[in-house]
Length: 60
Image (cartoon, rainbow, N blue to C red; front, side, top):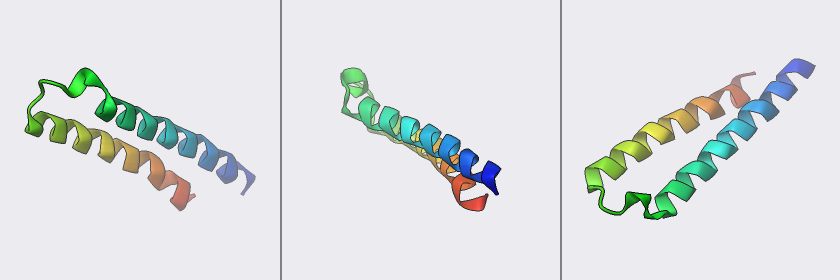
């Protein structure tokens, strides 16, 4: 069980980092000039990756 606790911390920190990157990107000037569909696609892709990183924290 001890190994799963350390995995939870690892996956949790990866998820936290990705979440912060998503928020930072969304709040930056990098999205200026992008079409709504492009922004939506990027958020969907990154959101999916975020969920994939969160999932192991609940399974193990």
